[in-house]
Length: 143
Image (cartoon, rainbow, N blue to C red):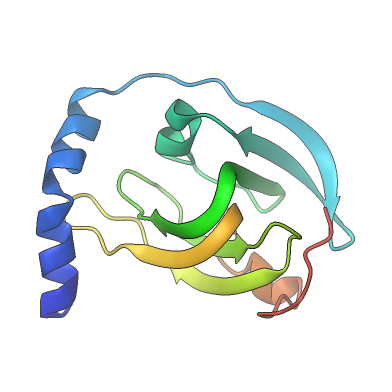
């Protein structure tokens, strides 16, 4: 961990404390979807509460994915606080074109590394799935 990661972690500390104090259960809508030809149970995160919850406290299975839908394209920040499983994070533009892929983001409990990317949509998979699907930057994700 470098000094930049520590500084960002300290900046995010108030959010981490607030997050810990507000442990709420959030329900997600889900449906079976094909992503690049492979079937997944896809959860939709389309509200602030769902964005904050994500895959926290859930062991993510190989056939599960979560799609984060945001109202506009821009810089999005993700971190792994409270997650149980390592995840691949795929940042997409408005046309589902991949702008960045983070492979095997690791769970953390406190000073968590932030992951940045330009996106309107973000898809999370269990770590390793993006390589199995042969996803690369610039490719369009087909959902």
